[in-house]
Amino acid sequence: MRQKHLTMYEREVIEVHIRAGRSLRFTSQVLGRAASTISREVERNGLAGGYEAKEAHRKASNRLRAWRRPRRFDDARLVRQVKEGLFRQDSPEQIVGTWPKDLPKVSVQTIYTFVKQDRPQWLRHLRQGRSRFSPSYRQPRKYQRIRDLKPIRQRPAVANERGRVGDWESDTVRGSDRQAVIATHVDRRTGYVVLAKVMNRSAEAYNQATLQAFNRQPDRLPTQTFTVDHGMEFGKFAELEHARKAQVFFAQPHCAWQRGTNENTNGLLRQYFPRKRDFRFISEAELRRVEERLNTRPRKRYGYRSPANLMTHAVAFVT
Image 1 (cartoon, rainbow, N blue to C red):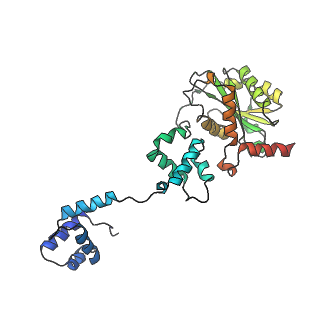
Image 2: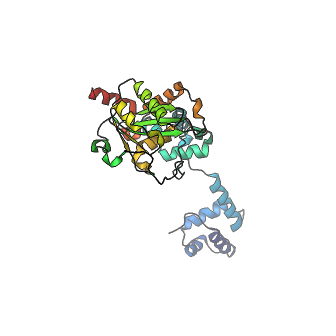
């Protein structure tokens, strides 16, 4: 494959041939280059009355370094569009999904690269998800701590296929104090989120906070099933089943992908409540604002419709 730019070796050959009085056409034949290439090289990088390979190579290298291909984000309109989206706490995918038609298109990766290289101060507006390789704080157990549980394989097929609203995946997210937690519930079909602050990880506190969180929702949200892990906060699941007239199913230990919708939502939640935050001091008003933000943000998987919009239509259809 022919090289685009002349090498240092080729320039040394040109210098030798010029000093020997040979023609540029002869030199081009020796190097296998077009005669016009050699002619332009001597004209651009040569010296007055001669040609020196080392100096010619330096000139060409400096010229290449000074040249820069125009980039997408040289357009200030694009920078402003990304900034406004990030400051609304939209993800790059959401920014691209709602991109104005009158602006040149950009990709999600282009936004990430631009922010990292050119606007590192905006990185704090990006979602800070948990490392996929971080070990779980729940260590493997040698015995089953929760009795009479129903395994996930018994969950109805309609729930597995996301065929209805009211099938929830549930978990808890911890803060720096390791005691107070946020209970997260996500509807498998719509992605709708219900959050509850729990001051400790006891099953009683978890059930009480969960029931209060569902009761305060503007619409009566259906609860068909809950899918949880083996944390002790779910130990009194039978009381939750009775109160919400729902069934609670348990995923297999250390199989977080069986609650993938909930794990993804927990990652979104970390953007607002990072691990270093002391959850004991989260107010109910702040929690509701974050809940509303999660439920009203456009989602790629739903064609950039929001979970709140989907749930409203689903509940209206059911009723």
